[in-house]
Amino acid sequence: MTTAVCPGSFDPLTLGHVDVIRRARSMFDEVVVGVARNSTKSSFLPVEQRVALARDVFSDVDGVRVAAVDGLLADFVRTVGAVAVVKGLRGGADFDAELPMALMNRHLSGVETVFVVGDQALAHIASSLVKDVARYGGPIDDLVPGPVAHAVRAALRGGDAG
Image (cartoon, rainbow, N blue to C red; front, top):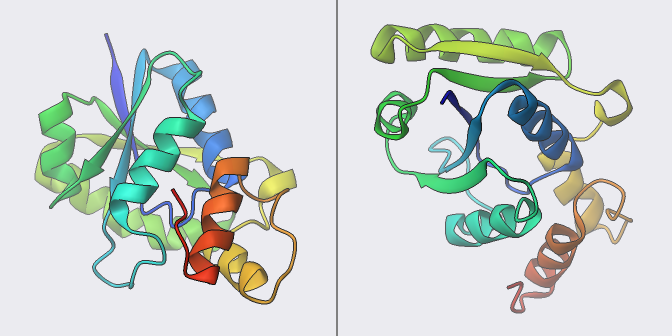
């Protein structure tokens, strides 16, 4: 059985993320969605909520499971027995940002990173843009899965987004 890890902060999970994860599942027997804390960013949604939302979104997809990543991705990859890390690319800037991480992860774990080119129809969707649109009351229902849209709006209201 081949396992891959699709890591990210998923803050929030977008339809672009969903596309890449579903396509990764078509290439590997199992995909572990690794929900990470990003040490360079402050979180919009708590990691526990991001894990719960991802589990809800992928509950109907056999071979996809979700777990929080605490610490180095290289350690997480070894723990789950993954043979690859899968990252989505929307364009050249994503590649420039992802390449050094892929090289470091290979250095630390020996595991290769597989880049999946995202669906061009979703290339404009970024978690940061989703948050900006939502903060100003714009529509996000065609950018994120339904449960995520609800959670984002609830977080902006300061209420329970669970």
